[in-house]
Length: 183
Length: 172
Image (cartoon, rainbow over all chains, first blue to last red; front, side, top):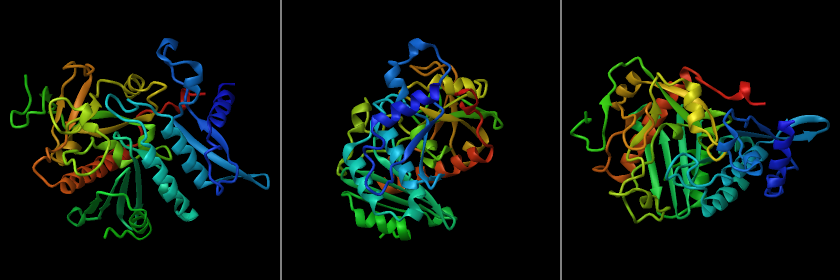
């Protein structure tokens, strides 16, 4: 019963509403969120049901349930949007609107085969962060309202490299994401 | 007892048992597909330079221009169970996926001292801090890259011993 309640709550919270055209009407299944704490520690029940620990989105194709990576990324972004100040303790900031918009623009240009790598994370400063691995490298990027940080950690630490721009540059981010090019 | 006098950030007693496994609760927003991301294992980087337009994190850092956590990664001592650490952290407004562990010796291997600072200030009694290097004398990107590398190493170590506690089994 409780899982059904969560499903309705998140669906009406706008996960699908915010999905761009490339997401084929996903249904959203939300996984565990129930906590064994006393009720007086909770916000209102309505608020509580919109807070999720992990989100998986699926599309139904010909009766088979098939996961849509972009729907997953969108559902994750919605979860990040739902977080308020203090989501990671004192001082952690909610998602910055500009960072969120720039991430959406980025996501719309990411090939389907790479969407899993583009799952959004949130920094304590309220910025979207990406992390992915490829060919022994660990890559990360942070999208600021007017900044872009890109880092490539190599198999040997002495070969690590990074770049920080004092403006946001979608083309540079895409080049880094697709080809690992920092400059 | 105070901590390392060479580092004014540090308070508390140094943890000497290299085999102790510190508990790190991972927020949902710092995980990918239910697995902790590197970003869950390093504190906020230094935000000294004001030339880059970023959120005013400095507003949350009384007494200095550095980030709010000042280079310290919050964990719990081993005597705190992974489940208790998780339940202490999580609320409807602070979702988390579970508790992972990093060994004191793994931190020391990255030149990160660990200190028991439980009960000091507003820290809970079981609190321990993993102190990342003070990079204020380095260029912004170099210092940040150091944090990224350490985060990767600690995350890899934590993932190698798998999750210590997940709420899944009692969730629904």
